[in-house]
Length: 162
Image 1: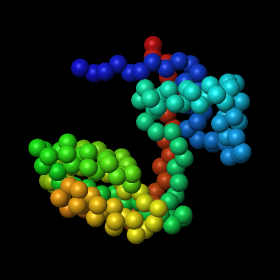
Image 2: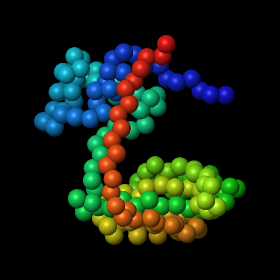
Image 3: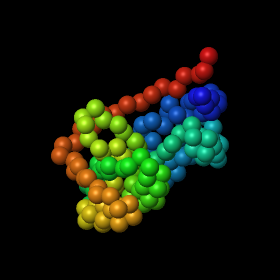
């Protein structure tokens, strides 16, 4: 059975639509964003927190090009036996360097079924994170470093349920 989507009102929809780009860069960015939305800074912060808690939003924050700051991103994968999925998933998700961990089945006849992104503050941090995952899971991590970067921007307008 499919879960019902959490309810959001018109103000929440305006917040989501407005903050998908062009977030103010100033001393009090939330105050500036709130003013543009016609609400108070406290209300904006409370609504964002509420939407995160209710899983309306899974993440709210900036996107950085980490390589320009000395860090690194790597797409990585594991071949996880189904019977061990929960333990491995918990071990991988325990690392703060892991983002976007998801199950993926493939038509390419590959045993790689758990995919995630590693993001580290230094290039050397990738190897350390891989070593840590391998030690925690007992499985080899397959790393796929970025060869070329593409920028794809997608903004989704929020409609009311009718």
